[in-house]
Length: 431
Image 1 (cartoon, rainbow, N blue to C red):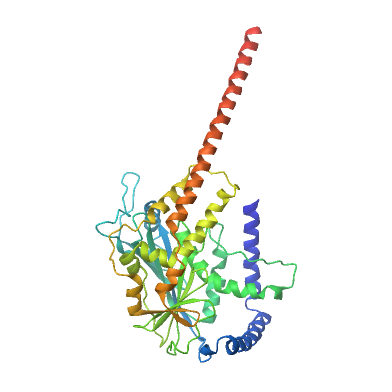
Image 2: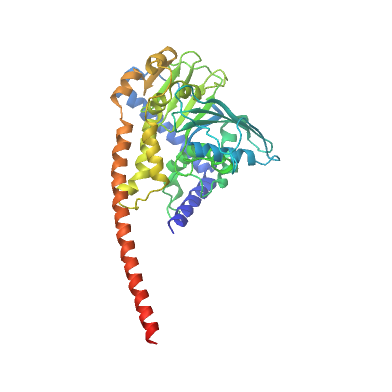
């Protein structure tokens, strides 16, 4: 029943979006709310942050040049991904695989212990033969540690998406989202006036693009996280006008990374899941995170994505700690154990200090203020390994209690069954 209700709410949100996104009423709302928002924003800056008053560039007239989506897979997951890649229809896709797929007889260790070397490079290429918008996906990968690898899916579009084609892409593909896909929840009540949910409609317009692209991974390929959470993503944008870091408004609460060598900026949202790379001069920046993962491994991954990892952990395991779901020895427990082990930094990675190397090519901003990255990470340091260990110990105790309880129940059931069998045997002898 819960699944049916969730699917009904999902369909309700999608129908609301399709019905209202292109209406004159919503367009007028967007226009008027922008005017009011700009006025309030200027007053806020004058009063609270006069040092930002010259930051008047809000990066208008940008087009979407592509999107990168990042997933984390175990060795088992890599094998399942390869099976999907080799099974793609030759009529729809031209696929170039760089690794052998596992068979029922022959298995492979794609993710190995990484003490003497590390796995990194091109994984596969997919060319879409019949898609209206997407030209192809390039897949790269790099091992984070001895247990997991990060996969980078670079979506290439046939042409950059302006506002019109961006909306068309969503409308043409939104119905493909199904029960296997992760979907953000929006509280839409059709019994109330549609204008009450225009703020949610704006949020949908931002969210649906990356979720549709994520659907290509969960439906055509394989993901261990993409059905239960939104994958880390980086939307690329460019515009005709050049970028000036001193006049660009970087946001009120966002984290931003300015590449000094190539003059592009990466924004991170509050959850550190959705990112945007913006560039100027109509240039398309070719940023790849895999080279950083290959170089620094765990040190890089947990500094920049550890907060999101922790949020996912909280959501996944709260149902066990609250008692809502009974703990059993299953894949969840094995995954948690692997996660504990994976937080070890005893790996053969280059020992350069990440923050010192970062400062050579990047500047880091919180809101619009340039900030020291090392101090930022120092202040928010979280001991992921200790958190996972403590929770694993607690879940292990619950598991042992349930195991003892289960054995006790089984013993009672066996005794009752034995008594019933004895009674039946006595009755049979009597008659």
